[in-house]
Amino acid sequence: MAKRLFVTGGASGIGRAAAQLFAARGWQVGLADVNEAGLAAVAAELPAGMASTHRLDVRDRADWARALAEFAGEGGIDVLFNNAGIAVGGPFAETDPAEIDRCVAINFMGVVNGAQAGFPYLKRAPGSCLLNTASAAGIYGSAGLAIYSATKFAVRGLTEALDGEWRGEGVKVRALMPSFIDTPLLDAAVAGSNSNARERVRAAGLEFTPVERVAEAAWRAVHGDAVHTVVGKTAERMRFAARWLPGKLRAQMARGGM
Image (cartoon, rainbow, N blue to C red):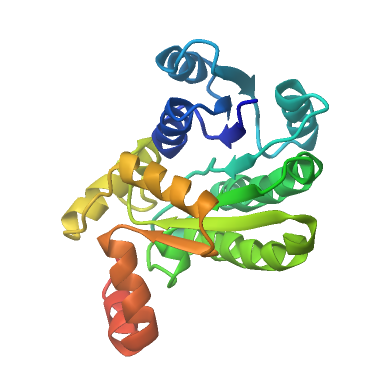
C-alpha cells in the first residue's frame, strides 16, 4: 500500500514541490489549500491517481476534520506536512493589527490545528512524521519581519515539544527552516513602503533557495533523526551567527535586517 502525504499550502511553492517529489517516489498525496484552482493545477501535474485535492482553511478546525477524513478515512497518514503560511513585513509599529492577527492565525494556529487534528491519523501509521515549515526567521528574530519571525519561533518551539511528547507514540515531529524561497509569499507588500518582500530580499543581496531543494530537505527530514533541518545559505549563516557571532547579528538587525 502506498504511503500517504497530506500537505497544506499545496497549491504552490514548497507544498507543490514536495507533492511532486513524494508522488514521484510512489506516495499518495493529499493536496490542501484555500486556492482551489491552484490545487487542481498541481494535481494535474502529478501521476494519474496519485493525488486528491481538499479545500482547507488551516484556521478552521472543522475544515481540518473534514479534509483529513476525506483523505485518510479510517486509515493512517504517514506524513502530515504543515506548510501553509503567509508573509507579513515592514515596521512592526506600522503593521495593520488585522494583518498581525491573520499571520498568527495561519502561521501558528494553523500548525497547532493541524497537529491536533492529525495526531490520531499519524498514530495509525508506523514511523509517521508531523513536518512543520518554520523559517530562517525562526533562528534569530529578523528586523522588518517581527510578527513573521515570532510565528516561526513558535512553530520551532511547538515542534521540539511535540517531538518529545509523541516519541513514545511512535510519531516523529520535524521542522524545516529554509532561507528565502522565491514563492508567492514574497509578493506580500511591506508595510510603510511601496516594495514587497521579494524586492527587499534582493536589495539585501540575499539568495533565494530553489523550492526543489526544500522539497528534498523535507524528504530528508521525514526520514532522518534531526528535529530541525536548515536549508539554504542564508539559514546556515544565520544559525552560525546566532551561535557564534550574536553581537554581529544584533548589529546587522539594528541596521535594518533584511
